[in-house]
Amino acid sequence: MQKNSIIKKCRFLQNSHFTINVFNILLFAKNIINNKKTSYLFN
Image 1: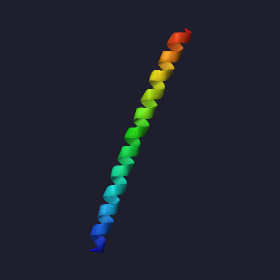
Image 2: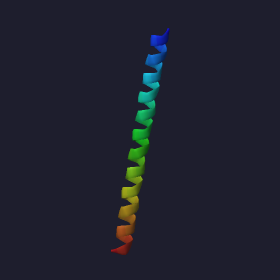
Image 3: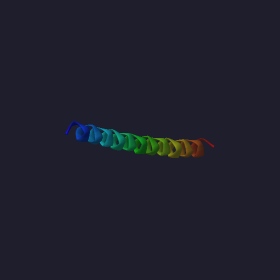
């Protein structure tokens, strides 16, 4: 019984870690797009 709950916790942590990674990638992409827009405007 206890082993199952530990496995579920590990899976939950992996899923949340994956979600955080996706979120970071989206933020990174957004920053790149914004930088390209601003450099395009200023050049």
